[in-house]
Image (cartoon, rainbow over all chains, first blue to last red; front, top):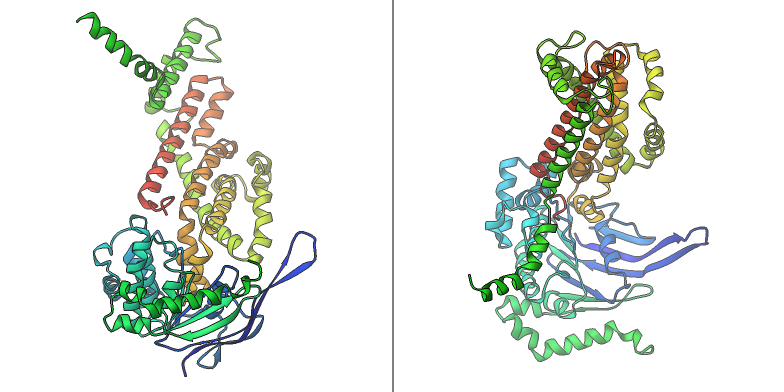
Amino acid sequence: MTELRLNNVSLSYSRRDGFGPVRSTEVLRRVSLSLAPGEFVAVIGRSGSGKTSLLNLAAGFVAPSEGRVTRAGEAITGPGADRAVVFQDDALYPWLSARDNVAFPLRLAGVGRIERRERAGELLGQVGLANEADRQIWELSGGQRQRVGIARALAARPDFLLMDEPLGALDAMTRERMQELLLGVWQVSGAGVLLITHSVEEALFLGTRVVVLAPHPGRIVLDRRFGFSQRFADGEAARVLKAAPDFIAAREELITAIYADETVAA
Amino acid sequence: MSAGETIVDEASKPSGAKRAAVRVSPALATGLTALVLLLLWLAASSLQWVSPVFLPHPTKVLAAVSRLLTQGYVDGTLWEHAAASLSRVFTALAFSVLVAVPVGLAIATSPLGRGVLDPLIEFIRPLPPLAYLPLIIIWFGIGEPSKVLVIALAMVAPIAISTAAGVRTASQNQVNAARSFGASRLDVLLHVQLPSAIPAILTGIRIALGAGWSTLVAAELVAASRGLGFMIQSAAQFLVTDIVIVGIFVISALAFAFEALLRVVERRFVRWSGRY
């Protein structure tokens, strides 16, 4: 089994303000989540529910305070090329062209210059940027940059793609098109995807599974399979799908789950 | 032209005309300032407000320039003195870049590096070169290495501090992205943190060159036989103020030229800086 697994994971940060006492903030409490190759798991939750911390744990950027993060049964001790990350702020390298950004993981892997430029070009074609390959990063729009970021992560040929609100900073129109692009990329690559988002519609449309986190401390309150992305792959139009009664019913159910513990306060 | 037209013209133009009169281009202001200063100098020396020994006439300074170019002063032409100083400043720059960039990287990326090197950099940063010059002569003699070392010491701190600050401009996500593609700590340093620091390093080099030129005269105080600083001091001892003034202008012009060159390099090679 090659799955990526968070096993009863808790995460706390210790913080000290000035000379005051050390405070410990619990970000995640006993979270268990598995991600198999080929799966698309969308994680959604209010701010403070530990979505990004979950991704940081899976990526290996932080170590859990309790529990284990494993890859095919082996404990993860740090980040690795099998789990490539896409960030909301694209995190590209502005001193490199679009092509060289995408070629960056290949350079790290020791791929020769000619081959990596060729493969970077192919990947940029795959995200619809064939004509922008030799542009500078600061010449690209926000949506184009994000596509470069996705192509760059794919260049690492990861088993898992970890995406932290990759479409969060985009306008609504661009975002819809990018969602379809993400599905296409996911199907071609066969990678397992962990997508952090704060859009319920996006989570439902893209995820084969949707996981809902509740805050203070972050914990999983819902983990369910959905088939909307498959229906899109089978040819249903995106807007028709998002307006379908069962989509809307599922969306309302998720929204209820997200705000379940807030009804008392309201 | 009828009276009516005139009225219309005056009604539409005054505000624009006034604004045009107030708006002076910086280049024009610079040119006018230089002209006024030159005229003041001309007046001061022509009308003998001050003794020609203190302030020689501009024509005398021009004559000194041609004398320096052909016959030279204290065993060297102006070219030879300038070449000697340039080679000292740029040898010092090369050495200080080789030392200061790795020092800056270490300060920014390793707690041990910061603990060891940061206090050392902060120790030498405020020291006036004239304060440590005697010690360096005692340790390293009066040869060329001492002169280069004095200049290099003045250049190390600004480059190291700028490098360290530049490394920190790489965002946590840029670093984490590289790590998630399998980058080692060294990969991150060489392929992410160092490139992000390049604009800051260039700024550091500009500041360092300024420090280098101001240290030059001090460095050439001791047992030099060539150099602009040496030329100025030799001339000053015999009150040859026209040579002193030429020396000052040449140092200023050289520093200005290299500053301009670095700005061109910056625009050409780090076009991404400030646009992303």
